[in-house]
Image (tube, rainbow, N blue to C red; front, side, top):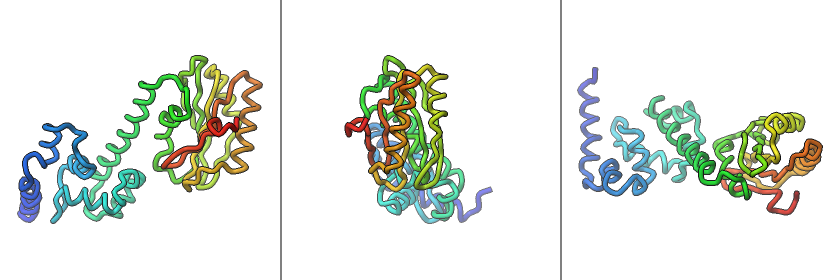
Length: 241
C-alpha cells in the first residue's frame, strides 16, 4: 500500500511534468513530432516512467546523463549492480529496463546491418555488423565472421575471451569453424579495451598465422579488424594482408 508521503512525492513529480508545455512533454512530443524528435534525456524519461523521491523523471534522466558526460555509451557499460550502487534510489527494475533498452538499440543496429548490407564488401560493413559484440566490454574477445562464396555472412562465432590486454586464440578452432560451416572466406575481429587502435606485434603474428592456415583449407582471410569503442583498424584497408 502506498503511504501518504509517497503519494505527495508522486504528485510533485507529476506536477513537474504537467507544468511543461504540452508539446514539451516527452510522450506528447513523440506522438506529435516522432520519436526521433526526443533528446536522450526525454527518451530515458519515457523508459523510466517515474522519478525518485524529490526528483522528477526528467531530472533523474538529466542527472544520470550529466554524470556520464552526456554519453549513453558510458551508461550502457554499467552493470546492473554498478548502476544500483552509483545511483541511490534506482531500483533493479529501472536499471534493468534502461540497460535492456540500450542493448535492444545495439542489437537493432546490428540487425539493420545484416538486412541492409547482406554482402560483406568493405571493412565498414563488417565492423557495423560485428561491433555490437564488443560494446561495453572491459576485456578482450576474439570473434570470427564466416562468409559464403557470394560474400554473405554465414555465422558469427566467439573463439576466445581473455583479460584486459590479451586473449588466447586457438587457430585450430577458427579453421574447424570454417570447415564445418563451409566458409569460403572469413574476417577475424578482436577488441582493445584500452582504446588503442595500433596492432601489437602479437596481433601481426596471429594475423599471419591465420592467413597461412586458411590457405590449407582453401579459405581466404579477408581482414583482421581491431575494434575500440570509438573506431576500428582494418589490416586489409592498411594494405597489410
